[in-house]
Length: 226
Image (cartoon, rainbow, N blue to C red):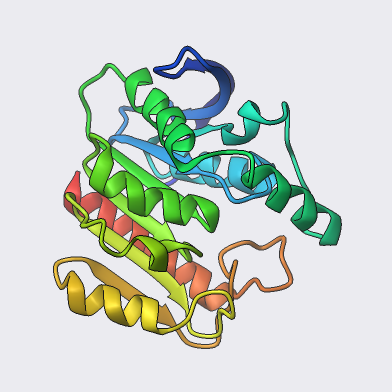
C-alpha cells in the first residue's frame, strides 16, 4: 500500500571522520524497517532518489549515501557516454573499503534498532554483496553487481537476494550460476531478455517486465526477513 513520504538530505560521518550527504525518505506512518540504497556509478541521481522515494512509499525508511563524495561533490550523472566515462573515472578513485565505511555511516545513522537492509545497483550491487559479509545488517539485495564474480569467496552472513539479467554483457552467466552452487541459501534470479541496468527506466536497457518482477521479489524478500 502506497504511503505519503517525507524526503530530505542529511549529513553522515564515516569512521575516518569523512562527512558525506545522503538522500533520505521516510513514510509518514510507522516504518517497517530501514533500507540503504547503494548507488550506481552515476551518483545519487534522479533514478536513485526515485528508488529511495519508492521504498519509502512502500513503508520503509530509505537512505542513499553519496559515495562519490570522497572524490567529487554533488555528483549527479546522466545515462550517456559522458556520464559513463565520468562515473568509471570516479569509481576508480574510491576504494572498496572507503565505500563500505560510508555505507556503514548510513547504518550508524539509524538508532531506532529496526532491521537494516542494503540494496545496491551495478557498482552498488557489488557493494551490497560485500556488505552482506562485512557489515552489521539484516539482509542484502544485489542488482546486477558487475564485480560480484571477483568476490565470490566472500560468503554472505545474512539473507541475500540477487538479480541478474540473462543478456548482461558485463556479467558472465557463470557468476549467478556459481553463486547458486556455492551459496544455496542465497536467492538468485536470472531475468530472460534483460541486460545490464534493466531496473532503470532512464536507461536504454530498461526492461519493464524484469524490473517489475524484480521489485515484487525485492519487496517480498524484505517482508520475509524484517
